[in-house]
Amino acid sequence: MPHSHAPTTRTVRYGGWMFSAPASFASAIAPGCAGLYAVQVLNATWTPCPFEPVFFGHAQNLLGSVVSSHPAYARWIAHPRAGMGLYVSYAALPCTSVEALRHIVAGLVASYRPAAHGNEAPAAGLLGVAGERHGTRH
Image (cartoon, rainbow, N blue to C red):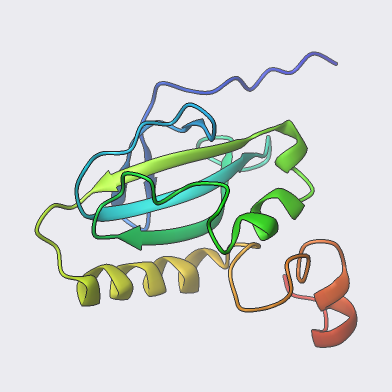
């Protein structure tokens, strides 16, 4: 079956926050200001856009914040759908305090329960490790 869900040029909205159109992890261009980011994978069942958030984060300067040296990168690539590519979207929020950004991310995590969040081992919650230790999460 051909892959019908190519990256979009449409912006995405998570928790009422407008994020840029998902771009490939390797080619995404971050704004040089404070804001939010969403790491996503393609998921045909995710609506209204086929991009499922697997991680939400924030930075005072988004440039260089979503890189392979990020502490959560191992969790991002361990997601079962990461083999189809990782995507990143940004929400520029210049002049926003770290506390406010942290609060927004906490709300997004509570609402979406992204698979690559948490302080677990890299594969926990993604490949069945957490299911054995913590029970199944749906």
